[in-house]
Image (cartoon, rainbow, N blue to C red; front, top):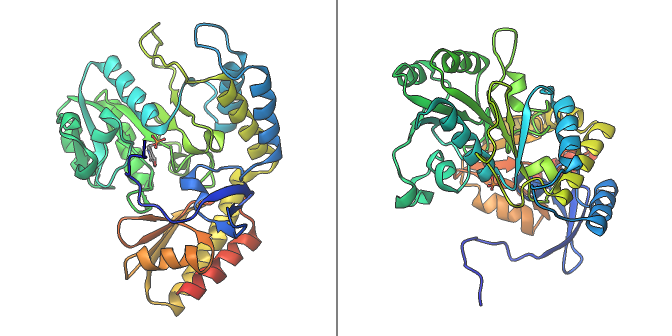
Length: 381
Ligand SMILES: Cc1ncc(COP(=O)(O)O)c(C=O)c1O
């Protein structure tokens, strides 16, 4: 059998990692400003995480959701305390798409409606409703194009109100910092206005924090930059990627206004013992090593150094981002500089659209590693 060839790959085989560095099968070292697509939160092969996962798999890797699993309760308690939503409920699954799928499903059970509003350039995953809410016709198969979703411009509150006022919208789903969309940020006014409109029209307000959340923005959740006394929290928050530092896991944080119903949601693998042990270890490290604060500090440093570079190199047309989620917009397609960064400078980065280099490093990136990246990027410029 051969692999189903859907990924354009670099001809590099990564064999091991440590912190913000990875090594290939020839022993060559690379600086990782990509974090395996925003997944590595506490750094590669963190000893505390390795120990927690190893101990757990030696004891019990999996048992079904038909028996008590104290690790799930422990994770829910810890996550609630760390992120500030200790009155929310947690439903655990295995990926980001599944998190959004379940959030939208629960929203529809709640208000009986079927319409969804999502942002232009949104990415919410590749399964049925999650892909329909994703604003990319190339990845929506005819079977998924069921007309549930209207895509609307970012920060244009009037356009959203026009749709919401029709009174038939089940859910609004937004990324407060768009990842695939090219590091575009929702404004405070838009967040507050949209939150209030959702309450007014009985529409469920979902923040997809799969990429921008879990500490990456320099607050636990990106929407927490936008909240103040006039703006309430989302009804649901979806998480995945960094939650377990590479072990597949996703979650939906659900406000107390949603009452659980036995059997309405469910999963075989979601919330398994191994994933929970890994996710608890991730929270331990995030707290002990102050990784959320580090993301803000090092992210600000990178942005200010990139803005200095922009004065010297007009090919950089914009630098934007928050914490360790940074977009460098170029006047040329990202393809050549990004490839040269990997091949010549041994540095992995992400990308978005056609012209944006996207930085999504592990949250433990040091100031020195940040400066190292700037030097490598400068060499390519
Ligand atoms: C904002 C956002 N939502 C959802 C997803 C889907 O997550 P997964 O690939 O784990 O299904 C992604 C993945 O890149 C994402 O960036």
